[in-house]
Image 1 (cartoon, protein in one colour):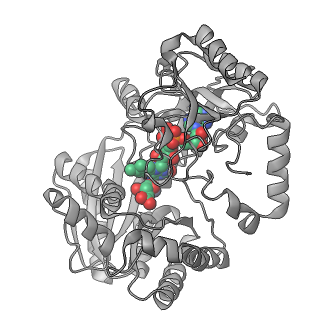
Image 2 (image 1 turned 135 degrees about the vertical axis):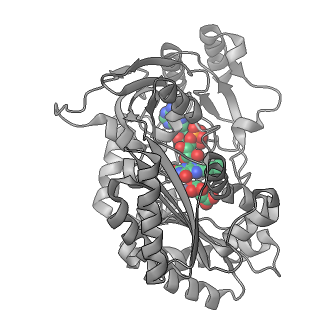
Length: 470
Ligand code: FAD
Ligand code: 2HG
Ligand code: ZN
């Protein structure tokens, strides 16, 4: 059966687009190198019709598919299982910019466009596409939409979902839904676009998207502020909202231990102010008037914050290169963790008003359970989203710590998340890493409806089985 399928795929796509030999680890191993799969084949269609042909052939053969973009996901959702029975459907060759409409402020791109390429296409047209993630050099817009990615501009512009107006999707039986609309208003029934976004390849294969663009800000300024506590960071967030209004585009908090990892692994980045303060905050202010206006408002905010005591010290970037360096430090935390060795990741959200209590309770409970535990605590505080990652004590080998304590640590963290009305996956998705936890943390009626949706859209279970709804 699988030999016949491979033959059909080769005839339809050409042999060069159907990979079965050589080193396929880029498609089979997850970004953190925690999980390794084995593909029956990696197929690389070059256009939407070819994607549809692949899905139809696999559905007919009863072979399941794993859609894949840049394979940067952090919840084990884009690699095949180890049995060698799944086809990896790589969207990387669908990488064309199809259209730009400056008057309508929209951009239509294929799913395999790398996020940086999308940002550049907007910028070349004198416009701005705000989605921004540390992985933007290799993640794809299709993967961003499939995971409803967040990143560092959510505070002002929303998640990937909020930036998408239309989709082109190949359904589980190989039909093509032509939904590439640039309309901002269209109330003609159920919004299938929002069903597909965040479905992590389990309901359809996204082949193209129409995205919202924005005017470029006249000036963007970045500041790095040292704060004594999470409570102080939350107070600073309130002041920033009050003083900058919609000009506040980014608010990232970073704990001392997280910054120490960047300092250790990338000393050339020269992390400012981290040694003497419990947390640092990276703030971004985008202004529609002028740089002078932006700087004056920013400096006034920081004066008020210094006077109130919620900021201990601060520096506003003098130029673009210093601002880039601040962002580079922030975005290097994930790589620095990878260099340090495995830890237990928690991509959680709680209301901003519950953040102080959540961190205090979770940290105390973790220290009581495993004394010496180290918290790599950082993230998008402006969105109530922390990467509350737990590294073992210095005395324990990383994998020994994970093997012995992962279940206990997860229970401690997720029970506090639940108690504060939060989510066990803020922005990375469910994948197979958290699929088993949904029955415990998701409202049972919501989960039952999700399963019915899966059954209705993919009755044969062809698309990314074992992910999201299991
Ligand atoms: P993949 O990893 O290839 O796939 C992710 C999921 O989407 C899988 O379930 C896959 O089956 C599905 N999928 C992929 N393409 C399609 C498609 N065309 N149609 C249907 N399904 C598809 N995430 C954030 O939200 N915020 C961050 O700030 C952030 N920062 C990161 C920083 C680093 C250094 C790294 C390594 C990751 C980060 N991530 C972040 C996680 C990751 O980059 C995002 O989830 C990203 O959206 C995944 O895109 P991708 O193209 O790599 O998708
Ligand atoms: C980020 O915000 C990413 O940098 C990755 O979402 C988070 O490394 C992590 O846990
Ligand atoms: Zn993040």
